[in-house]
Image 1 (cartoon, rainbow, N blue to C red):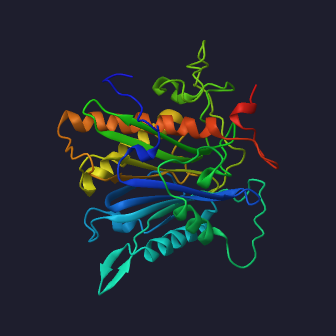
Image 2 (image 1 turned 90 degrees about the vertical axis):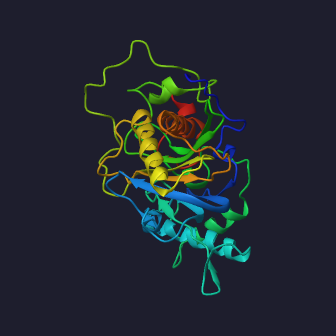
Length: 336
């Protein structure tokens, strides 16, 4: 890559100092949740460009809202039922004394987003109460610096048009020494693959063969045709949800601009993206741990790295998915 960029030591979201990630899933359910915990209240924002989002507590992330920082973020399967996962993360944080102090009480602030994986072949007959609160609690309890990718957490039951989706992550160390990293659950209406090939749309951004090293196909198939999508998509039946994080110092407005830039990574890695049937969303988080305050052209580099890193994370999520009984789509590794 240009500008002296390289992947961080883990090539994970946790290369940004000050945060941890945990996954929990139920393989029979074919669904799960992923928790991102911040060591300290963190500046955050959100940008939603899909037509069918499902969210919790995103309004408080607006620049004009009172709360300066949040305690955690949650990505979950389960459609609207999956919003319960944030309650499990909130319960964990309350148990360790975290939260925004109000009138002598601490209220953990945990914005969340969900994807639709109800019709993926898993058993969703859970009875009266969904399992997502418990999955969120387990994900928070498991949070650490190392975590798995692919068919885990919020990516457990994810699918794309051509193959299984999954949980992906990647990081980039900028020329300034600052870090930007992405975490994404890929459940898109569109495809991460070029035409009928095993080649990723994100190939131009790949570092060290991190998702197979196949590069771009030659000859490159024409894209001037109707795109490959999931069969007969319906509103709310897909979504790519993500977190872009940095150790730079940003206010809420600048964090939102980072989320906007990260959506460019969706467009570079998925075709099509941001459809009426996707709930495409990016949370942005700035821990400030690196002390770097980007200005001028530095903001352009940060935004460009956010897009490239997100594209890589999407490809890594699909690349890391593994086959499981009852799957409705093949994993990337099963494609001919």
